[in-house]
Length: 423
Image (spheres, rainbow, N blue to C red):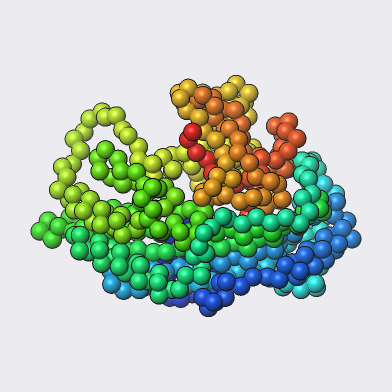
């Protein structure tokens, strides 16, 4: 799920319990700890691969996914909502006569996956009649039966809901005592159980965990009617419940007294600081118009790098294959040839799909390519893009960068930015 989907979903806390389609259906908390039988996944994958081959596919990959979410939402001294959701199904992608086809089903049966494979092949065949150039798929090794799991210490899904609500309500109380007028705190957990199989010979089982603890603290001056808000300093992480341990070794106190957090987060400490800083903002004078040097907060840099480097260096966006309200990309192929000056020679930015604790860390991407780290900008100059298997030949590469991603089993996988960071 994308961050914007989560923000949209939080509106459900004060509204109905109707779930958006991308979340699937509601389940009991105990079901969050279940999984799909590995033997069943292998059997269904083989059935789909065989059906695709019989339908004329020269390549096929099968993604069997169980996508789990838990939301715990609080405001002041009240629990607003607790939701546990599941979405399970199979996505099948094929190449027939040089064209892609894709189909998905939530029927985890032999008949279900065989029918989906045939449908994907039929779509590919139809696409081949109007496609001007065949798909060129970079080679990828078959890894056989392998697995990867987010290296968590404590499965957040296994922590009782009462423990979570007690934590959040205790944090809210601490913020109110420290001067907050209003406080919202939430716990958002994700577990993606993803199985990938391909005609290249890979059978990859991955168990991906993510956690995010957003918080918003507001202080009001009742005399003037003014209010100021400070958000929590947590980041979405690829970690387990240990992220909330508040380990002192994983935080840094800056010269101005502000505490920033790394691989561990102290929610209560941050809530108290947020309340005091929101109160301080009420008394702070307005900035006088003028020219100033700015020091960007790390959370601001996330967005700056995300939008000015991450998206523009997605090769499909560079080529005009993907566009949205923000456009395509200014970093066109000619700029790579001329080593476009992206910034000063102090600027080095890299893409990394294996960085421990990061939100996008996985062992293999969604087309079975082993993930890695690579440079995008070196000493201020553009040196590379983010590339997947059917784009690699455009840059003269022999392999993908391993950054193909689907947000759900029902979505076709496509090029998506890795973790993009300033070195």
